[in-house]
Length: 141
Length: 159
Image 1 (cartoon, rainbow over the protein chains, first blue to last red):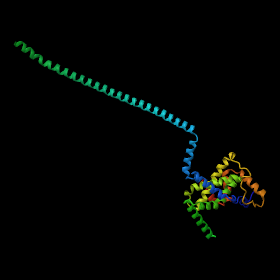
Image 2 (image 1 turned 45 degrees about the horizontal axis):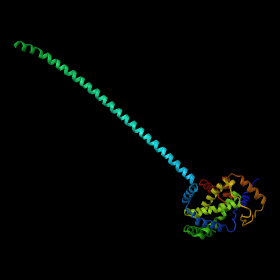
Image 3 (image 1 turned 180 degrees about the vertical axis):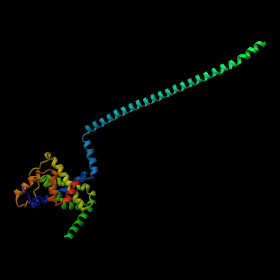
Image 4 (image 1 turned 90 degrees about the vertical axis):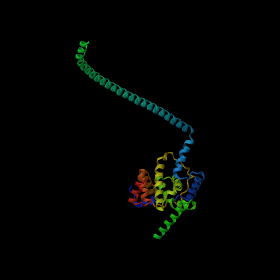
C-alpha cells in the first residue's frame, strides 16, 4: 500500500501530551530536586555508580579482595622477577671480572716469561765474557 | 510573520536564561513550548501513549539537569530531538520488559484524532512500526518535524 506525503504528514502531525503534562514534569523536577538527584550529568553518573556498589556490599568486598589478591600476587611476582634479574646481572658482572682477571694473569705470566728469557740470554753472555779473565787470575796466583 | 518569529525567539532566549538561573516558571514555559514535539516523537516511535509520556517526562528531567549546556533556542530544539531519539531507541530495545500501565491510569488524549480516514491512519502506523528504528525516526523527523534532507543528514551524523 502506498501513502502520499500528505497522508504521512497528517498521520505524523504533532500531538498534544494532554492536560497537566507540564505540571507532571515540574512535579518530577521538584521531586528530583528534593531528592538531590537533579545534579549535572557527570555527578549523577558518579552517584549512580557509588549507590550501585553501596547496595551490593558483598560484591564490593569480593571485588576489593580480588583486587588486593591480584595486586599482592602481581607485586610478589614482580619482586621475585626483580630479585632474579639482579642476581643474574651480578653473576654476569662477576664472571666478566673473573675473565678479565684471568686474562691479566696470562698477560703477566707471558711478560715474566719474556723477561726471564732475556735475563738468561744476558747472563749467558756475561758468563762467556768473564770466563778467560778467570783463567789468567788463577795462573798468577 | 518574521516579527512574530523574532519575538518568539526572544521569548525563548529569555526563558532559557531565566531557567539557567533556576527560575522554575521559565523552565515550565520551555516545557510547554516543546512538549508537543518531544511527546509526538516518542508517541509516533513507540505508539504507546503512556510510554511516550514517561519518556517525554524523562527527557525534560534530563533537560533540567543539562540546561547549562544549552546555548540557544535552536540548540534546545536540536538537543531535545536528539535526546528523545536516543531514548526512543533505548526504550524500543527494552520494550519487552517495560512497565505496562493499566487502562484507567493512562491519561486521556487531549485531542481526539481528526484524521479523515482512521483505517488509513491505522495502516500507516502499522507500516511505520515495521520499519527499523533508525528509518522510523527518519520518517518521523521528516514528516512530523518537517526536516529537509540536509538537516536530516546533519541530525543523523551527529547522533
